[in-house]
Length: 226
Image 1 (cartoon, rainbow, N blue to C red):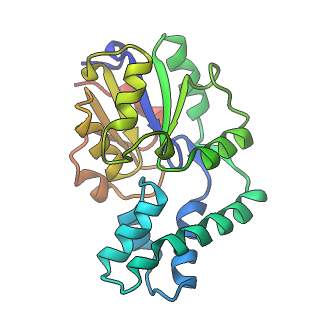
Image 2: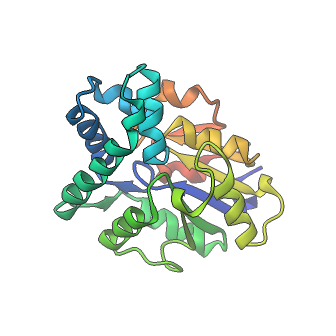
């Protein structure tokens, strides 16, 4: 299978298409630390990357066996306040070269879906900062708050397939910068899964989910084939 045979691509946002300087995970780390939980940023990235953010907090607290796991919602609400403050003055830009990639893919009549562990509110705010528009840079945005189950469940990919009348998931490519992106693609039985090194996780962390390809960024997406 080659990229030209794909009918739809599903790209993660932060770290894959969008450069927001890891502010989400830095803010998530800050909110957890503020609540009196000792943890380093690396572990926050390892456990929380790509997930719906309340779920990420719960998983992080569970992983470190914190006695404050029942206070995850309090931390999450504080995280949302801190993130809104951080985003107000944040310079959000595309990953270098990625906007051209999106336009080229759409010109090939391949559907471009952006999906994310963010809420729709946060994802829309990011897109507004980028000045990206539906039916121009992308065809559809799907977020963790648009489905019952977030990553690693395949619900966002299945919803996009239904919207665009794609019955065969082998005609879908999923790419992202975290292992849970790859897991999501595998769970949806996507024809191609691609890890990118432009974001949160390392090559070794991406390799843990056995993606079909690992590339430096989406700029290299044309080179993938199986």
